[in-house]
Image (cartoon, rainbow over the protein chains, first blue to last red):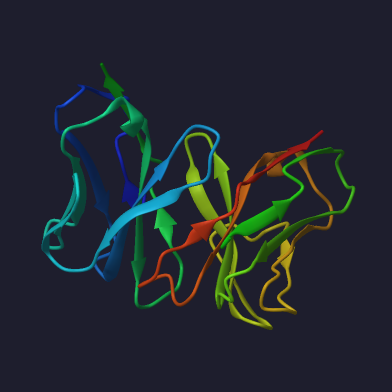
Length: 111
Length: 114
């Protein structure tokens, strides 16, 4: 079992819709959870991070964490074509300073 | 401008010819890291450094070396490159532990080993 799993996609949504991206992880000791966005040919950039169970909102983005079920999700409201990119989930724990990435989900927002 | 720089951006080399990819950050960050990105495998950590002279292995350290003699620089060394090291490499830095702080990524180095 992979440590961090994501559906590779592509996930296609129309402009203005809500895009829902999911990520599951295997290490119950994981403490920190990150969502990165990576445009084709570019480097990853952090969108947001979450540490506590529940929701965390930042503009059009909402991260949701459920440690009991070991999943973290990212919701993108009012999706725009400029949101089309690969979204990487990353997980870390207090036991290590390693950051484990999922393989990413490719999101396509069509006009 | 705060940034992480990598050089070269593109490199084609042959098996066994030693090479170094440089990484430098101007943000006075403590933590630096190297990743490789391969299709279907995602980003995998090669080595990381918590501070000067402090380095540790990531998930895929075989075939790589690093050094951290200065805070701003974290070069990645391939002593004897092989074709399976053909990949896209990213350097990253953050001001503190990656658990609580944003990692800033460099622009990437695309390496091809023939």
